[in-house]
Length: 235
Length: 294
Image 1 (cartoon, chains in turn blue, cyan):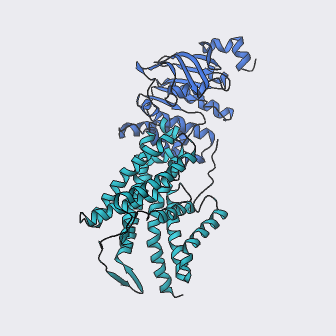
Image 2 (cartoon, chains in turn cyan, green; image 1 turned 90 degrees about the vertical axis):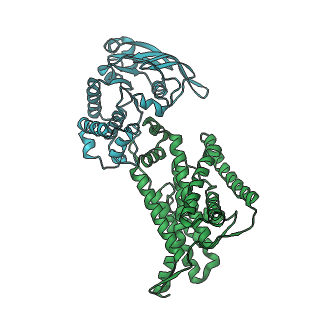
């Protein structure tokens, strides 16, 4: 579904991604784990068109993504929930969801998906007239995911959905991720919380300073001594 | 000071303040979206005034069509200014963009002088010189037009920003450009639209000023532009209702400072108020320290 081949990305002179290759197949949950600064968010930003690769190829559903900018990538049914949620704090919950459907013109379909988002996140329905900046961190994360669903993605990129959330909320968010996956949406998940990420994912890639260091079945990686030592606290 | 006198000054202040508010909206919208003080904005207003003058004097149009043509012309001008002068600098320092805006201001002022000569032109009387006496008030036909046009344009703007697709996109872009792009919003187009709308409002103000004071000249944009900037800051820059409030507050201040006999001090009075407001409330009258949960 999504394939990256030898992708290099620079921030000015900093060589952030040094030739990354991986793939995500339809229906999977794939996770990228790694420590701070390994290039996880950079990878997602490059896929969603916020950053341009200097070298390498990216294809999505048979189309070349390399030169497509962020607004047009949404049209290809690929949606990115950015790190730190980035909801429009000055706008209402409802307006945030409307913006998620910005590219769509099918009023009926939008209404149906809105109802579906409210089904997944009943809290958002209760608070739809509330300004997003007044929501709690967990609710903002729900809104950020709901907003992305409004664009009907086939592939959803999730960047640190558990960031700053209490364990119980993290579990809730991960339950939702599972539910979205079961509805047929493919998910590429970036997480610091490697244990949680590996527990939902089918496959995983471990990123180290801009390179893929390890890859494999999520369950296997969970049990591998290297991963366990570096990312799961050595237990 | 009699009640009638105060009422009369209120009317004059609202009339003048409406014009400031129309110009201030453009400042505040552009600032809201790209954090640039567009110092050429007052000069866009001047170009609008000249377009209105040309339409009425040379083409013999009546007021409303002339204003609409001026608004259209200036919205194109605003978009071109942004694309040519500001867009290439979007990633550079804010100071570089600010200096470019000042340069653009001079370019428009002296470009206009070159084109049409620096002489002051007289605006034809497009309004009937009717004066109404409503109770103790003296109301000029022009006052009614200014207030009506302003109220209509502000209502329209409010509706556009609050309810339409482009309005929502504008608010999203002004809050977070990257997140807006992830929604599929073309940020460059939204910025262009903001310049187009702001410049159209300035053009409307320009035609109103031209008609109201009967004259146009190439440097006429400087003082109203500066004051509209003050109005935008006074109301809280980046906040649309703030620009409206700030414009009215400034207009009323000026008129009352003049009315109590300090007409030579009215600009100083206006700036004094600005300084006081900014000391007490640095974010402006309607500005808030937005708190975000992270």
